[in-house]
Amino acid sequence: MRRRFSPSAVLSDDEVHEVHRLSMRVLSEIGLTFHAESAWDTLEANGCTVDRDTGNVRFDPAVVEHFVGLAPGSFGMVARDPGKTVHFGGDSIVWGSASSAPNVVDAERGRRPGTGDDFQKLIKLGHMIPSCHLFGGHSVEPTDRPPNTRHLDSVFDWITLSDKALRIYGIGTTRVDDGLEMIKIGYGIDEDQLRAMPHTMSILNVNSPLLVDEPLVLGSVALAKRGQATVVSPVAMSGAMSPITASGSLIQHNAESVGVSAYLQMEVPGCPLFYGSLVATVDMRSGAPVMGVPEAVTGAIAAGQMARFYDMPYRTWLGSTSNTLDSQAAYETMMSIMAAHMGGAHFVHHGHGWMQGGLTTGFEKTMLDADLIQMYDAIKPRIDFSDADEVLDAIKEVGAGGHFLGSPHTMTRYTSEFHTPTLSDWSNYEAWEEAGSTRVIDRATLAWKELLEAYEAPPLKDAVRAELSEFVERRKREIGTEDIG
Image (cartoon, rainbow, N blue to C red; front, side):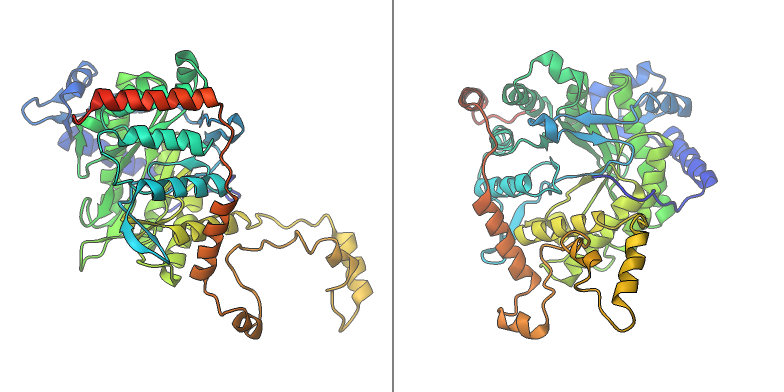
């Protein structure tokens, strides 16, 4: 998809520079704490001050500016089907699946812990839904699979059940190494081809405020050294994990994002990175995160301005706090979609199905999100007057008091002129009642079931599937019951 409208702005040019200046003060005067001894030598060698007792790192602003400037302004990510390769940069916008929710819900079975079967069904839905361009992680956590080998089954499912782009988990180096080897097998490529262009990504969430954990650092560096991408994304929950004001959250968020990005560029100059953002608020009565609210829209637009200031592809997110598929789920989701477009996002994480503040992925919510994403995409950025002569002829032909339902101008266009949402019911009340008085959630249930019924696995050579299976089984034997890093 392409963003049809230019990004919005909530910061003046002077304010963008002020956010940068204040973020540099955070990095130079307060610093980030790296619970990652593996990073300390590199940081020191590039002009940072490291307290080896605490892990606190102070950055020279000039050093940060230099290294962040090495990050590419755009890049692609190869899918197993090259025709589904995605691009991050310019006016492109890539929508991902939901990711990492521990629970799943549907209208018939209710809310429950996610399983491998649920995970596979959500992959199949993502494969069938046109607006889902990339698997951004576990659409739901398959909690019936052992955590230390779960990544093997997950990558196998992504590669065999779909041919779209995918993200692996960069928690330590084992998951990265296994995931990249499986991509090489499944895509039929060698190491040089893997390194030539990103084939996957991972996400380094800063443990806001100001803390960087070692497993994510190790995973991101391992990916970068083999040519793959990382999303550097603080989790700035205003009033909880960052200051309560929009200004405070933005300053801290920006400092965390560019500080960690600078470090990764020290390790692998020119490695592909996203400026990641998860600026949100919390319910001050309960402490729960809330999504799709006005403050999150403002934060997403501001973060997008900072991403453009550093000339980095921008990742944001989509979600809802609603506990069911109701009007709250719809308006919070549409607010999130609007924030992504207005912020100039290039990659929207959690794009299909995320609800309950990120704790659950919904089957019906997946269908609602797809419908709303495509509805927003159908907004026309301009009015086409190329048919003006036909318009005047039609007006003349119909005349005063007539109607255009049967005019030639209408008849040649009525099947394509208007966007028709998948889940909407536009019948009159009597017809709707006679058809069973269905609600959006009912139609969404029918929609995901029909998609699963129509699903066909993309082609994959038997020899490739067998090699992937052998790799998974061998690695499971080697890992056994041990924890992995």
